[in-house]
Image (cartoon, rainbow, N blue to C red):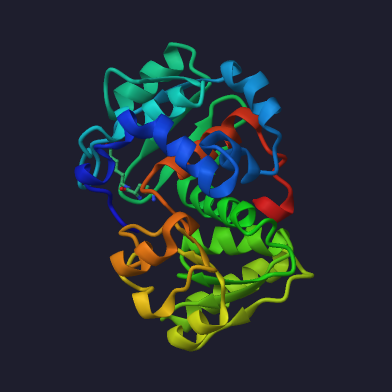
Length: 286
Ligand code: 2YG
């Protein structure tokens, strides 16, 4: 899993309104809209309920330690969406205890292994990887004008790519998986086939062939420049949750408004939508 650097997120709090407008131009949906779409929720339901959950973001010093302004950035995204969110005054156990003792309804916190939102009442745990995969799959769905019956290439079969593949399959896309580790691709294929039995999941062997065959791409690898300039065309649509961005600068220039990428916003917004609207945790989206 990629660890964010301060420079990856420094710009976020001051650019949220512009970013949401940019998303709306690119996809037809705002940051809030994409976050709701990730769980199949109506924006109105989010807007009605977003004040009901007081959220405390708790910094964590474990492992490689805190990332400068990470918790503040998470809280800024939540506040931008109209949620009630603050950063705990203390970190770690003291911060978690502070949140519970002060009557917060949910906490959001991240160590080196997991970044989660925990509803203290329902005990629902939303993982950032799952929310990010779903959020970018939702963005691809709206960019494609509904992904149903379209062929989609999912590059990177880790937790983010796997969650994105699951939602895309449930939305009716024909999903092709690509990963250097074939076992990872097989694992996702099995998981998605259980989650969405009607889906037609295939595994691609070769990057160049796969890119030449697909217009719609979810790029969820932790590698830069996996999609080179020579492999893109203006009719493609790419949603890229992978950090660093897997689309080369030349390819990004060709894609222009048909590329959605960020380092934290869509994933955190989808976590907020999950907290606020408590999607029914059926088998399909566990
Ligand atoms: O509380 C803190 O400041 C740190 N313990 C946060 C550490 C987060 C480590 N994880 C990552 O940097 C990413 N996996 C976060 C999510 C990236 C979204 N694509």
